[in-house]
Length: 123
Image 1: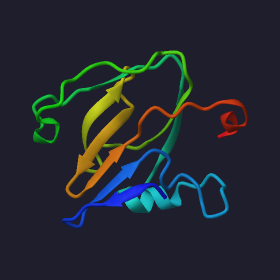
Image 2: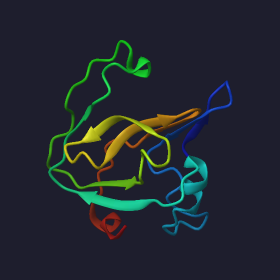
Image 3: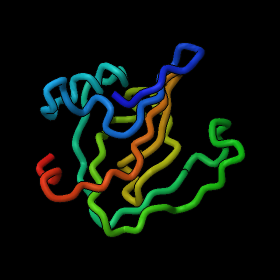
Image 4: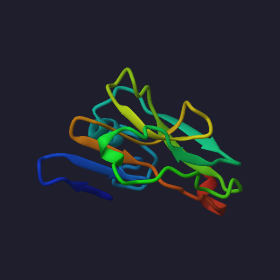
């Protein structure tokens, strides 16, 4: 699993963490537990770009907001009802329903560009 436990007892979740079980089968049970949420949905997008949206948040202090992504790849990202689950969104795809960076209390998630090619498109 690619996650880092913060020194103050927090959790930083990156990439595909928790999207698969120990046998490599797609299973969001672990991600739901790590995030502390009830439901996780799958989103697959092409022609995407994302940017930081919470410019005044102290977590982004000193980080410039800019659009990134070439808009030509397939992007796979887990999503959930961020506000209902108590998360603040820091970065979004051009589709405002899909966050790429967010946090609540001691849990931070970052779902960076995940290009899917060939066999992986069956996710």
